[in-house]
Length: 315
Ligand code: HEC
Ligand code: HEC
Ligand code: HEC
Ligand code: HEC
Ligand code: HEC
Ligand code: HEC
Ligand code: HEC
Ligand code: HEC
Ligand code: HEC
Ligand code: HEC
Image 1 (cartoon, rainbow, N blue to C red):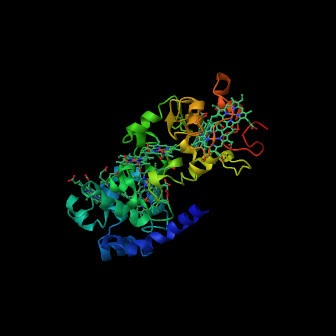
Image 2 (cartoon, protein in one colour; image 1 turned 90 degrees about the horizontal axis):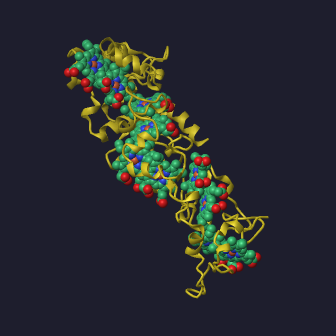
Image 3 (cartoon, rainbow, N blue to C red; image 1 turned 180 degrees about the vertical axis):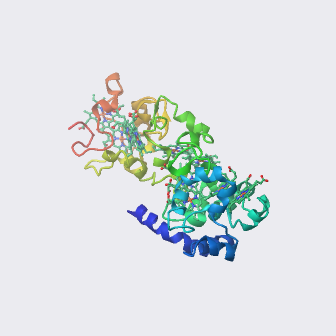
């Protein structure tokens, strides 16, 4: 719902936003005037995409199939959408100079921040991109065109320079290693995506997570059955969250557990020597640690919470 509202707004807001921006961006607004390319040329140094096509037909043809140009080249919508000059700035001087590179915006020559600004003049909407400049990516000089390419995209959806997860692995090699462990979310098979859990565009939450990890919202999207509420909650699931027992990416232990054996995991909190801090929960198991008790979840099977058993037995 939220997202759709954002999208709708987006269709109308860009030109408002742009009109508050710098001079070139303001010209984009003028180019939105229904009077079309002819008057743009007169007024503002815009020549229209058809003119660019004359010399850059290869680029034009590739770009024509992308969402940018689909908008820009709709019949009757000339100049209203994202034409060449919406990104490259007015091209008259460039054309008159016979293709003078110094008279047109060349993204390679912009700083990453400047390039981002051009994209963000339209793409600041909803929750998705609004926080980009505060993201770990932006503050480390990773910008829109590190991941997207308007002309040389490898994916049709979202114009990516590389599909996921390879895109992310290019820089996050340590994460690649984690997803190669024996137990992992099947990101490499495309079953789960990095961007299911992370907002690649940044947000308020730590680790650029899409939803709070503290409340495990990021996990409940797919593991709703763990959400409860349960009559008998296992307290750490509530208080410390999924990642207190599981690694989110991958693990050498079954069930993505942080610890190699279940009993060792449980005993991190349920110390046998209750005498340590006798006044504090949790209390140790009633039973000893003979072999038959070591597979704790054989008996305490509903370890994430239960509506039937206060010690999480099967109903
Ligand atoms: C959404 C913004 C955007 C639009 C619209 C756009 N460009 Fe680009 N252009 C870029 C970016 C960013 C680059 C840098 C290369 C890349 O990332 O694809 C670029 C690169 C170029 C280059 C350099 C050569 C190359 O292959 O990279 C040319 C020439 C060019 N654009 C021409 C055009 C023409 C002609 C149009 C209209 C048909 C156009 N651009 C529309 C953003 C845009
Ligand atoms: C009269 C032919 C002509 C027209 C029309 C023309 N260009 Fe160019 N453009 C060129 C030539 C030639 C170059 C290559 C200059 C070079 O490599 O030194 C160039 C280079 C560029 C570059 C830089 C490419 C790079 O190597 O990084 C961009 C961006 C660009 N043009 C965009 C546009 C846009 C946008 C339009 C329409 C507003 C346009 N051009 C119209 C001839 C033209
Ligand atoms: C770290 C890589 C990365 C960076 C940096 C990045 N993006 Fe993206 N972007 C992606 C990926 C991956 C997707 C596709 C997500 C999916 O498939 O669900 C995407 C999706 C999109 C989409 C389509 C979906 C939507 O949200 O509407 C747009 C538009 C977009 N990005 C624009 C931008 C802009 C503008 C910037 C710079 C301010 C930017 N991106 C920076 C990786 C990135
Ligand atoms: C003049 C406004 C404008 C500018 C500037 C602009 N875009 Fe866009 N962009 C749009 C519109 C409109 C769409 C099509 C509607 C949509 O997909 O949400 C779009 C679509 C996209 C998509 C594809 C979304 C999808 O669903 O596949 C990506 C990715 C994207 N833009 C990235 C960029 C990047 C990167 C830049 C800067 C180099 C940029 N845009 C500059 C307006 C703009
Ligand atoms: C061009 C390199 C590059 C690409 C591509 C890239 N990242 Fe990043 N990413 C970085 C850098 C640099 C940082 C900041 C330093 C760090 O935390 O590693 C970062 C930070 C992050 C963070 C925040 C880490 C933290 O500690 O807060 C997340 C999450 C993230 N990236 C996810 C992704 C995802 C998901 C993708 C693919 C859609 C992706 N990245 C693509 C370079 C990249
Ligand atoms: C199932 C959800 C999920 C998926 C899928 C996922 N992540 Fe994460 N990621 C997390 C969580 C949760 C954290 C925070 C871990 C913590 O704080 O203990 C995290 C942390 C990170 C970090 C910060 C460094 C670190 O290890 O703490 C980076 C970078 C990162 N992820 C990148 C990626 C990339 C790249 C992909 C895809 C290849 C990806 N993630 C897929 C949930 C996920
Ligand atoms: C986008 C959906 C999605 C999200 C988000 C997600 N998971 Fe998963 N998870 C799955 C799927 C699908 C499986 C089944 C694994 C398989 O068959 O490869 C799974 C399996 C698991 C398993 C069992 C692995 C095994 O070896 O049986 C654990 C534990 C797990 N997830 C924990 C988490 C945690 C913790 C989070 C939040 C950080 C999370 N998941 C977020 C989709 C998701
Ligand atoms: C106190 C430790 C602990 C916490 C906290 C925890 N888990 Fe688990 N989880 C386990 C153990 C132990 C297993 C293995 C159970 C078994 O061996 O049958 C497991 C198994 C799983 C499985 C795979 C088997 C199944 O039951 O579906 C998933 C999925 C899972 N956990 C998701 C989550 C999610 C999501 C959260 C957060 C809401 C979470 N876990 C929090 C200990 C924990
Ligand atoms: C991160 C710490 C932590 C881990 C790990 C943990 N627990 Fe707990 N557990 C608690 C806390 C705290 C309580 C609540 C104690 C209370 O309310 O007095 C609790 C309660 C319980 C209870 C309910 C009995 C009671 O006293 O309320 C059982 C049974 C239990 N845990 C079993 C396990 C098993 C089996 C494992 C391993 C799969 C495990 N726990 C892992 C912290 C943990
Ligand atoms: C063979 C079945 C079985 C196994 C395996 C098992 N338990 Fe229990 N556990 C019980 C029974 C029976 C109770 C007592 C239940 C009651 O009081 O209603 C219990 C009670 C508990 C309690 C509640 C506090 C108490 O002392 O009454 C905790 C905590 C606990 N077990 C933890 C563990 C841990 C940790 C492991 C693995 C090291 C484990 N259990 C393995 C059967 C088992």
